[in-house]
Image (cartoon, rainbow, N blue to C red; front, top):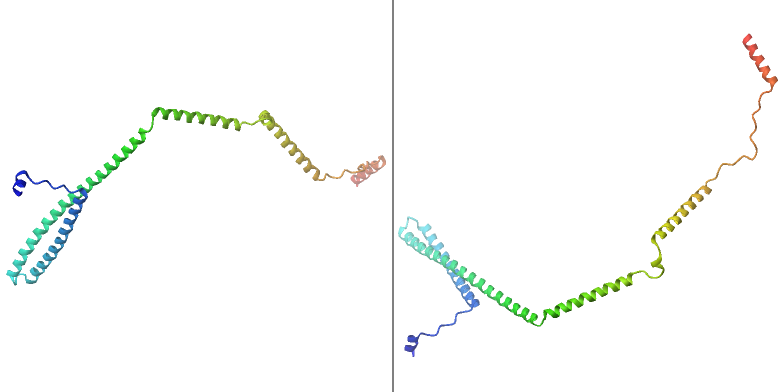
Length: 217
């Protein structure tokens, strides 16, 4: 059975979905991050050994330095691997998002097409014409209802304004008259004023004589 399988080839395993692939990449990232933390701790330990022994115990220091170099190389490799995995995971996430968006847009387009399939453009135009016609009728009815009827329609606004001005003027005149009556006028004398007495002829002559006598003295 295995001979025929090898001869004709085994059936290909189905590719994982984007979601499954993303999850696997995250698992690998987590594993590599933990290994990275472990190696960093080991590197720090080797560094302590180097500092402790220094040149006093060269053999121990050199062995620790070699281990430190190997650990640092592994850390560099892990950094590169994590960067590659991160790029791949982000690309898969973007592709997965685009796929979901396209599915939603495709479904929306089908729903819109189905909605339009039940519409006839001619029927829509007829309906809109009817709506406009009914709106016009409603406007005409509103205009008729709002127009004044009977006496109000025959009244001239200019005449009303003229009459209003006359009434205002009458009120002003009335107030002026009331103001004049409230202020008392001076009393008019009942008898004629006394006439100024003029000197008689004799009195006039006596006065002149007195004046001459004054000059003579």
